[in-house]
Length: 107
Image 1 (cartoon, helix red, strand yellow):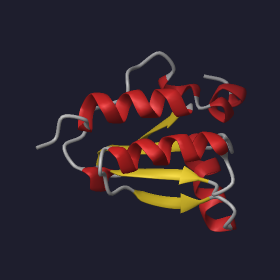
Image 2: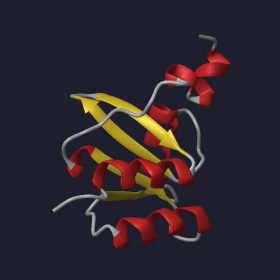
Image 3: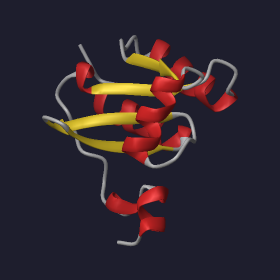
Image 4: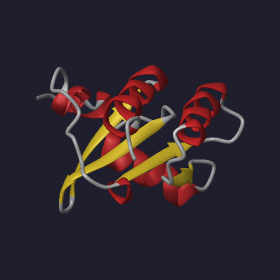
């Protein structure tokens, strides 16, 4: 993988997002004014999920997103699939599909 691939977050390109058993393994990197973030947050509300949110207008959260995911694009769902190992899921519709598929049928 080249340096450019790392910046694009291509380390897991084509690999499906890992399934986790708990919402506390998820975090949403977002900006309040972003319409795509609002779309994801509406589905989080609809599904009655409690997911930690980080506003990337705060420099520390933006740095964490860049260091981990390699892109500044939001929304981004950080999925901790093993202790200290993260999968960074970009694109609002992919995030929504993931949340609906894995957390939409909660009792």
